Length: 320
Image 1 (cartoon, rainbow, N blue to C red):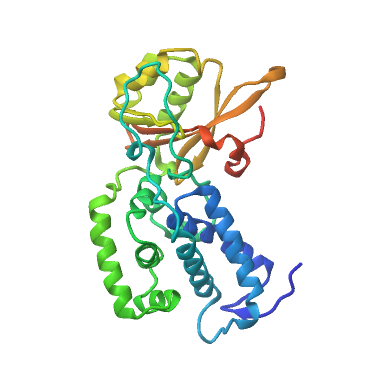
Image 2 (cartoon, rainbow, N blue to C red):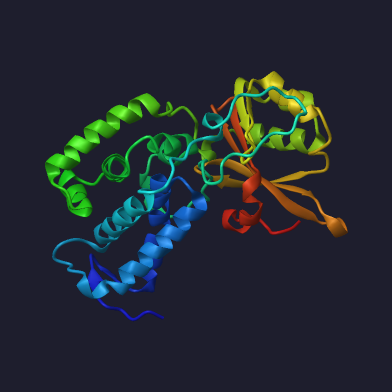
């Protein structure tokens, strides 16, 4: 147990407080770097730095939370200096039809990966749900690292201009100028906040998706899709648009026959752990399926083939 070293805003700096900060630091780092696993690693490094430098903390200058975000900002900006910009799979490859030709893989580390939801973290309730969506996080990648930090701190976490400037070690004027440039870039690159949060999606829509998928019911699945639904399956360099193409691909073979879906959430949207028949009669993790909806129909399905080893992080069993 880490010993108590100070009291700030009615809380003590110990492993309990650092543990409370971890979920929101993961989300902050995720918006900065666009990678679920990388965000968890970054938040852990930030917490270690908080602990190692605790003797330098001055409660008269800032709260522990502000101090934490200052360290996280500097760490992520440094991390991003040599990192390539991440994007959605649909921005990294050509649109393909529902053919049966093999597809190449995306360049490793080039796409935005999903993030497990916070699971009751009170800080998450104050954040607008669309700011954790993969499309929004991908749009943030069009900004420079410093612009990204300014915009997230100001527009997502609602820090004042003075607080943001102090966290990033820049002047208030520089922070204001950076924010204006970032908003202008994001206005051209950002998605419309049209998707509904996971808790507000019609349960019948999701239940119908599961039933149709598990029964390999092509017509039933097609009836749940928006006409312009987008489907991708990173890391495969492949995506398609349109309910007819998606249904045709789903019904073109037996690759998903016998698979099961177990519900979870990711990035504030409904998601499913997809399990395939394994050796010995059990079901093994196959992919994380992230589903977005406009409330009436499914608008996007991202089948993440690279997340099978991360099921536990999404609250999914390692085997069925």
